[in-house]
Amino acid sequence: MAATPGQKSEEDRKHPVDRTLPPFKMFTSGLQHVAAMYAGVVAPPMIVGPACGLSPTETAFLMGASLFTAGIATLLQTLGFWKVGAKLPFVNGVSFAGVTPMVAIGKAQSPGNALPIIFGAVIVAGLLGFVLAPYFSKLVRFFPPVVTGTVITLIGVSLLPVAFNWSQGGNSQAPGYGSLTNIGMAALTFLIVLVLRKVLRGFLQQISILLGLVAGTLIAIPVGITDFGAITKADLIGFPTPFHFGAPQFDIAAIVSMCIVMLVCMTESTADMLALGKIVGRPADERTIEGGLRADTLGTAVSPLFNGFANSAFAQNIGLVAMTKVRSRFVVATSGLILIVLGLSPVAASVISLVPLPVLGGAGIVLFGSVAASGIQTLASAAMDKGENSLIVAASVGIGLIPIAAPDFYHNLPKDLLVVLDSGISTGCLVAIVLNLAFNHFGKGGGAAEAVTAEAVGAADAADTADTEGAGSDATGSDTAGPDATGSDEVRIPNQPDRRVKDSGDPASAPAH
Image 1: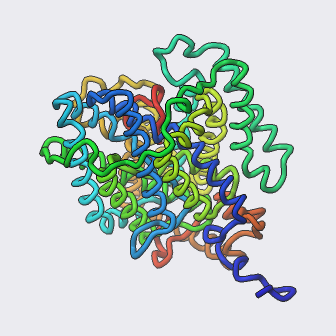
Image 2: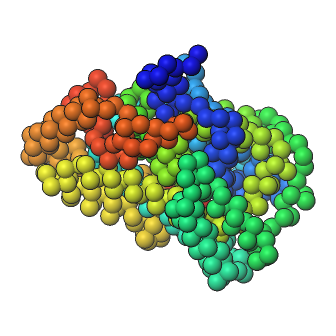
Image 3: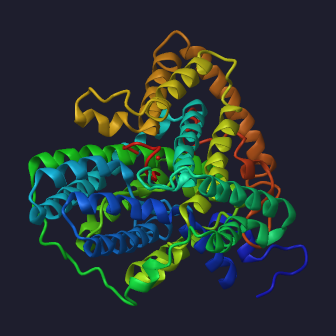
């Protein structure tokens, strides 16, 4: 029934996160998310497969399984059921945090036992995380703007080396790595995306990343850096047969290692949900965090059934939401369906893989930079001139940048510690939480911090009274104005009036999230 003049339709009254788009816009916007995260999903199996003694054909099967299980996890996260799912526009995929321990397990075991042992450990880690989700989500009270802003900034900065690596070619051992051709294609794609964002309007502006990737790929064909080999060798249909590599086996050492990875993933996912909640104007409270962590961990526990690995939220897609301002979770649910189709059709997956990494790297600089910009906006509202907040940010960012600026800094420490220390997001997040507790809760500055928080809550309440969702939104579910669109205003967690509110491995050598 059409709305009468002066009244909003039922669709318009929904929060932009819960709105649907026309089918064509839904598909193209969802495809843009898939293009942004595709390399990050297939990279872990490309590394783990050979380490477990798999042939190129078996590794390709593992890549398809990762796409399929990423689609399942994304649907759990965006659509959800019962108390599962954050119901935010989150893309889920294979966590890069597990690559290092999985490679270690693969090298320590015989080829026939490596993957079954990994899958058994992933199942146990996922089930443990599912049980811990309600308790882990309560940590949200320790994520005020000074913490979330720091973590969001680190997410963006930590992902930028991935884009730089892609821009050089993605494989440091390849002959053309860092060549003028690769870097030139990345720079050209970067410029195309910027120009498209400037000259286009409406929906076309929102899919400027996708258009930039298409344009860059077409230009790369005569340049000679587009590989069509994957299409010619791919099968039309290929279902990821359950337990294709054998029934799961349960090894204590492997289980402990993957449980640590699960805790790291849950920490990063919590930070990612807080970041995305800020960007889309729906702050992530304890219930949202709990549902999101349940989706992550349930997706992780189910993935080994279809030969997949641990799943968690992909931070690079937060940048896409921040830049396009298309906030509909159903767009990302469409991405989940696309991922499932790609997992079931190797030839369809190979079409996405046509995008050369230098082209993806040029677009990635804009995407990941948008995440860092969102973090800086959050820090601008964190009362940096009060208490020790500036010291918290300085120390946390400094520690978080160690794995990026000096990848071998921790090389002499025990390997089990590297699961956490090699992730700048995790270490920076932990340092920010601890220092915030020390200075703003248990230290001498506790009273001042509470006064600042009370003042900020009052400002947020006033903003909420004036306008709870910004000045408006367009038909595509993207904001055209309002504080929630920028993520620069303070937000208050419901029912918590006194509280405020994503890789191990070398980030310069492989995609991360």
